Length: 121
Length: 121
DNA sequence: CGGAAACTGAACCATGTGGTTCAGTGTTTA
DNA sequence: TAAACACTGAACCACATGGTTCAGTTTCCG
Figure 1 (cartoon, protein in one colour):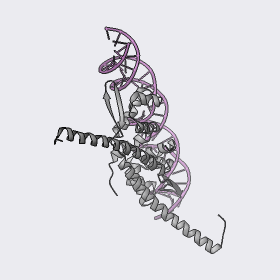
Figure 2 (tube, rainbow over the protein chains, first blue to last red):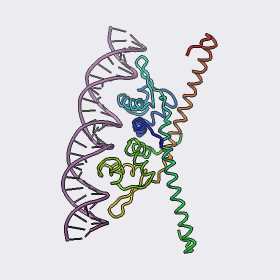
Figure 3 (cartoon, chains in turn red, orange, cyan, yellow):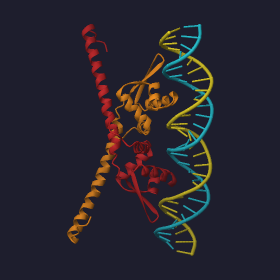
Figure 4 (spheres, rainbow over the protein chains, first blue to last red):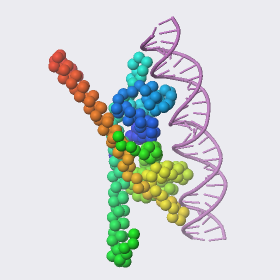
């Protein structure tokens, strides 16, 4: 199995595990925004929002830049490639295991109908 | 944009944000295991591992069943479809934003070479 | 029956999280 | 220049997390 950088996965999955932060990403997908704009949108103090942005920034999901007195947030360079890859790898495992299970169930069902001629269920 | 169930996303991303838990999923992808087996594999107390399994179970990523004195853990029914879908949706956003940026950069570069005939960089 | 194995639950601990307020600092703008 | 604005940092709060130990309970095996 491919090796994934645990710390990065930790950080980005943790970042994604909060609805507000997912909302911020969604918002930044539409356009860049300042901290106060985001704070306003998500009904939160400036300080609170700054923390969220900090988490997203540390996970590489957003980058920020301060010009004058306003700090502008942009979607980061990360394209979540590793995260998708991880999930996909395990979706593969899932699938194969469940397919095997499905096949067994199917076989049992067949046998049952054949042996007992049941119509129930 | 499609609506995703926030609580489920919260739970599963949080579950995935821990390396031990990702390891457990990987392990269960190979074969079912008891709590003590997992605890042993990941060098942790039974009680500690039980907590991790509890988190994974609550996120729908594993299911467990107790027979006699041993509780066996299996990959859950979840195929992480929503989670992948969420990430993919935003990978789409990411891509389009960066593509736009790339196009601008490309255009600037062209213009620069054309105007100044630079070979540097 | 009696001990060991496998789990369970409560309690505890250090640390992190999501939020706040309050008191700044630096930047605009009237 | 003074007020307003945008952010920053420290401190605090309640609660969650990742781990432990300890004291059970249930189940298996000899």
